[in-house]
Amino acid sequence: MPSPTLTVLYDGECAFCTWTVSILARLDRRRRLRLMPLRGASLPGQPTLDELIDSLHAVDAEGRWWAGGDALIEICRRVPPLRPMVWLARLPLARPLIDIGYRLVARNRQPISRLLGLKRRAADSRRR
Image 1: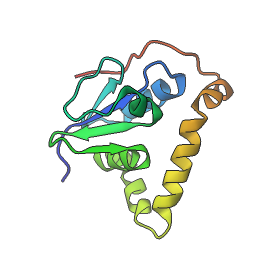
Image 2 (image 1 turned 90 degrees about the vertical axis):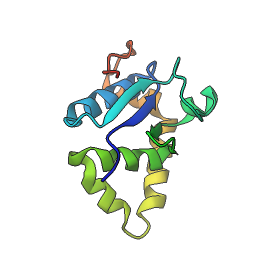
Image 3 (image 1 turned 180 degrees about the vertical axis):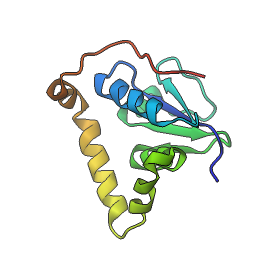
């Protein structure tokens, strides 16, 4: 069983990121995620701001860090409605495809925000 808290650092100035985090907050009924805007965050072993902005990052209570597709899979492991993604990630070739898909979305999050009609707003996700 995963530890109860996974801190997820996201770009609070990105409309797509804050929209995604708001969905995660609704799905996380067991409150296993600590959702935190990356600007102003200060955690042990934290990557540089440039690295944080480049991709999603997560850290558990033991100080283990995940980034990009690996962070996405770890988030899914903690949130029951998303666990089927963890099972899919075990299929042959799934991990490389998840990484490619993640990088494609991460590189294009601003155009995706515009396409979805998302406006940049202050991060309003829950913090603990």
